[in-house]
Length: 241
Image (tube, rainbow, N blue to C red; front, side, top):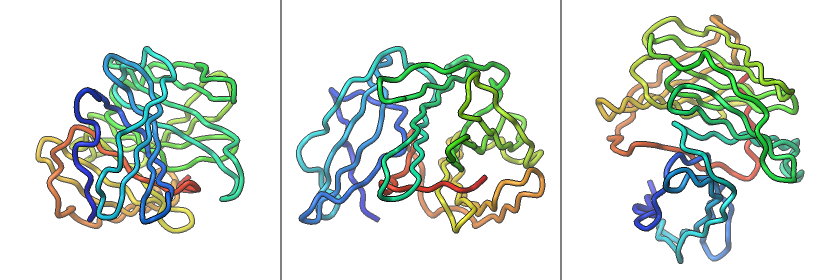
């Protein structure tokens, strides 16, 4: 496993990372780009380059997008029809410290808010498992241990469709992270910050309570950081729902 520690050391006070896109940069180097929240709520696009063995090359680069982003987490959804096409839809989702859930849309002329909803304050974590031209779908767990899919049509106003998947045992996870697995499924990492442990699950195509979930066991690592995210290729089809 390649590790690049302490990328955002002071004065880079960053948090809430989205998935970072990893693109080859030649000579064994890779450039990683994603969005983070800096300081008291500045939304930034950040990129940095690593070399062979994961060593940081140069210093991180930031581009300020806006402020007022002091929420609990930040998730970016980006739909591309194929590996050679440009993104046709980019959205950001964030839950504030009171549980209000919001969406912002980048239509090529800046990011604008396209809705807020309440009623999801008990949700602990959201993991993006599907992006299509017309909707995004998340896997979410709540404090009571229930697991849901949250389907959000790309239309306005914001109207999530919440479907139960499991009724118990998911309350231990403070963060869920998902990646594509096969043609229609997802691999999901659940992180328990209290015990600093992580567990993997193979999750089939979302089908409510009929969704197939197979436990793959405990990850042989200690999860000591407050937030985790994944690296993805520039074409990252999510087809889990």
